[in-house]
Image 1 (cartoon, one colour):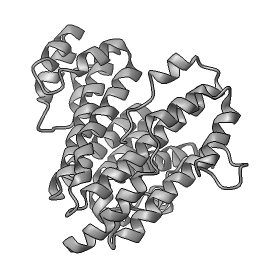
Image 2: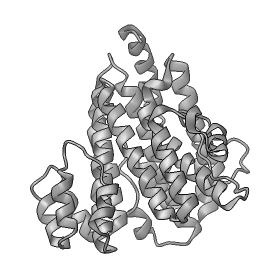
Image 3: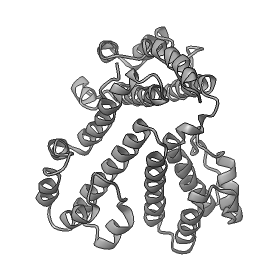
Length: 322
């Protein structure tokens, strides 16, 4: 895509950014008396069409709007595949589990991957992975064998999750784009930290951590693994000497606080890219910003539906891009 095309596309994106949900709007949502009032406020903001959709239908439609816009602006949206590989691997998990139990399971597949879910399901059902992208073939076969012959769903998931991280990292770093490379770095690093913390708390052995942890530049996974096999304080000590030192307090608070910290870090790192009009970065940042606000709306609606205290909902909401 030529630089002048990016200039036009990014000018459109700047106008679309004006419609992104900001903190004052989330304050209004939080102040709503109930779930239905939240849906009404969102409808007034242009979320949803008929006024009768479920929350999940509304959020799905908002995601559709994002990719429809991107498709209008960019000739080849495969430049954003780094964001979509996770959906492919999720669908691989779903297909293997569905074939394993030999039952139809509704609503288990995610749209907007790089390959159609039915192709993945057909490959699993026939145990012929030659139709899948090269980066999925080996992991698909290994995960399939584990699930079918041992019934070990956790190990099946670990194999696929590791392949997901490796693919995102490799493709993001090879993209030649600063934002995609940084996104890949942060995505894998935060996943590694999560694996180590959960691994320690659930007493996972070295073999599990070796299978699960994915290499990246900002984390020494061998030192992280040693810490996870030692004690919780060892993990904190290691992180305190990395660029993720600020994560320690979030980890100590709760898993949901740490997850929020990770998402907020990505938003903070991508925010400067909106001022880089000669590349695809502002468009990529917009995609992530939309995913971030959709996630936050889901968290808030779920909280309202389950009558959670506002304080509990607030501590889970993500930092907004605008």
